[in-house]
Image (cartoon, rainbow, N blue to C red; front, top):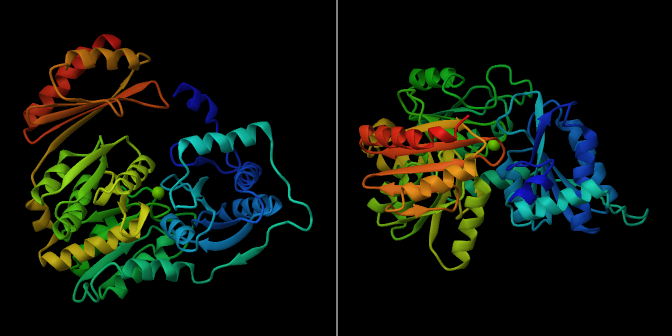
Length: 458
Ligand code: MG
């Protein structure tokens, strides 16, 4: 763990991020591409995509140069959502992909996500290998007659759109109105079209590609989505959907314009798939609301928990399926949902289409579907400490009579409540979550934990 942290100098959980011209530069992008090209070797083919940020073209040029110089062929998909690039890597049997995006970060940021041949984001072990090549500068350079070649794929978005549309009943959105807010990001060219092809009437705001993000930041917050909510109410839409900067996540507002928590979105999406596939498995990190497990149980499905982070959820899903388990859906409570029927990564366009499929199938307003769900109350705290390991040891002992899951921090269940005490991997703090259907029980459990660990805090 500590070794991996020491070695991962550039990459976080979801790639490299930084402020353009300060720590995210064409020089760094070139070196990342050279290192990735070195790992793949000459004669391989890599897909390249970017979001709408102003620094995208400069960084894409650097990535292209790095890959070509290693002898890798580059297919340029231009501006696409991250899940579109991931789908094309898989569908075109490419050796990898490079996505230039800073996801939900503000406009001055940019970053790079590395995609493996199976369409998933690069995992920790391979990322450490890639960084070692950067640190030791052991890049390969192809000779003049072995350099890579460039091409483009003008049908990139179309292939992705039609793959999603094919997952749902024909014309299922007929008679349903939806408002889409792609936030001037790449989904402006994909999500509205997906929903239209499913038969829905679609209104779009923030519909142009614009890397200055003039009307809202790439993180879809309730505040930033106020114009979306207003438009939903005004047009009598069934719901509104917004994306983060690279559209791997989807955030919804109901027909009354009310912002939906990501755990509720995951629960509803899970209910759509569980209802149609009873007996299957839902995969989600240990930090997700118990709502998802309750919904899975109500459809005769089970829940399998993972380490926090979409990459870990996606990889666990693959592993369970290889072992023969009927995994049907996975994802996090932040609007990132993974659909193995389609591909093994978070896909915001697929989430938008699923919500449409759900509303069409149930023929009820979204608010009524939400009102039917069991209500859970979650408390979350962040506590500064440099004694996270001691806290974990102490709390394991304290809760020793309860079932404890130790795959990421400690998650305990006690009567109708659960708690997660999870040290941060990057900062000197622990995150604490408690949840129950009984708000008083969730609050009491939080107070009890905070009281127990107070001596370890800063
Ligand atoms: Mg994202």
